[in-house]
Image 1 (tube, helix red, strand yellow):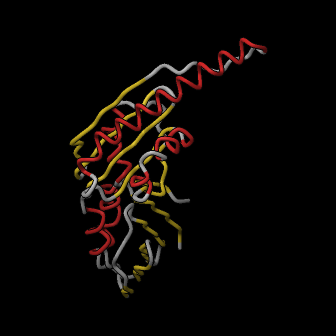
Image 2: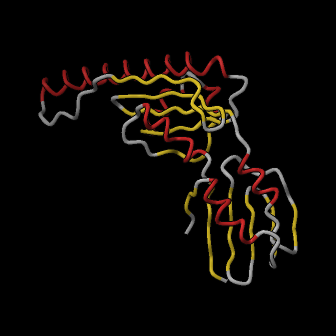
Length: 204
């Protein structure tokens, strides 16, 4: 089963195998490391340019890719709050968080329910507009430098914010990050997940 592992822990896991007996295949977005005891497949979070086949455990191109820093953006949105940030490597260099009250679901029927729904829709719209405006203000100065954008929180809410920021969608990472409460602390924790590689280990 594949799991995400922080890049430093991947390095520690693999380095004892370096230059040992086995076979290493760099192909597409993954590296397949075959030894007598196991097969390990590693998918770096931002892709892999190197291609090649080695009749030994060759880790150089993989470890170089994992160690490489990038300029990344994070956009975390849920109904109730949002957090936007820019990272240079693992350092948060610009950020803004915000929150707005959005009422929960209404269980009664009739005109009361209709008024509630309109009020809730207005609160949702105000929150998402604020999130989009904040994202534009924080990220626009870094637009030409941002390589990838990480999205998290609630998919539907994030999708609505992206409607007004199409350039972010073009740089979006495929992985969506589960964030229960978009706050500054979640942004600060995000780099570990951003630089984590997908690792699959199989016994020989």
